[in-house]
Image 1 (cartoon, rainbow, N blue to C red):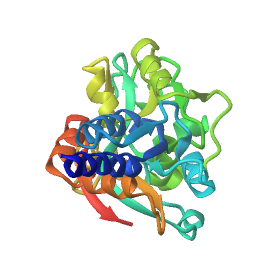
Image 2: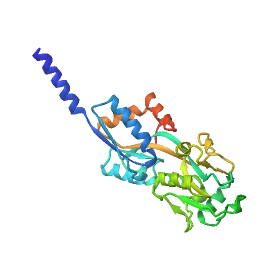
Image 3: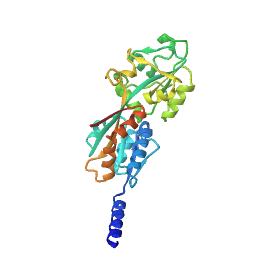
Image 4: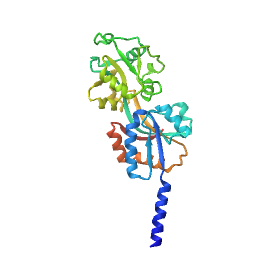
Length: 269
């Protein structure tokens, strides 16, 4: 009996010693999906604790925090930049989400060219009448330069790469602010992802660019999208980090990703 009790005690102590906390932070648009993954993971591994920062750190902020040791996994909505790629970190792509150029429902225009899109953001085109629409001033909405949605938007359209936005462009700090603005403002254009568009349930709509729809992202024709990555330090010693990455590969995790309206993948950058 003593041997059995001692064995059980040792097992409990061993389990407790193996328990670990892992912290994640970074791209704000990934927070809901990764939180769902974390909750499902903890049900399977109750000894581990997964803390997902519910406030966006932005992609650059997440990578910087990872490199500094403040978090264990960074959430990145895009591939690592050249400067980031030389850091002692590695990125695992887990999902793809199409970016969307969205307009308010009162805008009758359904398609513009990429150059017209850039001219709108540069302040050269200021009225929807110039694009075949109604005589109404274009309300131009954007996100901060450090935001992944904005960074991938600039990468997606060549003329946006180094474009200086016009003085009337309104920068919205949160994805929820962009969502609400597209719901409530008139004659507006902005940038979201396909998850937000789906959640909007028709309260705003997608604009085609060069005749191409965001729905063609997976085929490679639509140039603008978020490639969601989990980024870890090379040589990471926390076993919980390794377990979490292994969990993300499972059918259960991929179902969670699909439920979050993203396409699951798992690739090492």
